[in-house]
Image 1 (tube, rainbow, N blue to C red):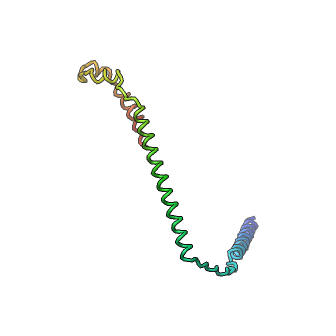
Image 2 (image 1 turned 30 degrees about the vertical axis):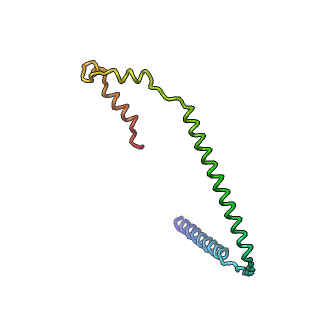
Image 3 (image 1 turned 90 degrees about the vertical axis):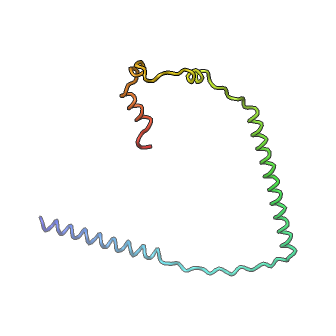
Length: 133
């Protein structure tokens, strides 16, 4: 039985090697460079100086028009922003915030120390400052 197992193992290895060699041979055929067709040289067009100048003038005109439109859009945006700022009411401080600021407490009083819970403080600090952020 030991000899049959070795024989099957060797046959499997030989088949694997032959299959790999055939696959590599096919890949080399596919990767072979294909003949490149040569393109015909493009004909160079000659342009008159007058035509060239007219094209340049047209481009300059279109650039100037684009700059004017951009300036108009910027002015409209500034005006819209100013109008929004004028419409926005001034924010008044909340009454609760004013009361809290005016109320002064002494933190060394025994009343505040009794309300303080170290366990809750540690838990809240770990929630607010997770290590993976």
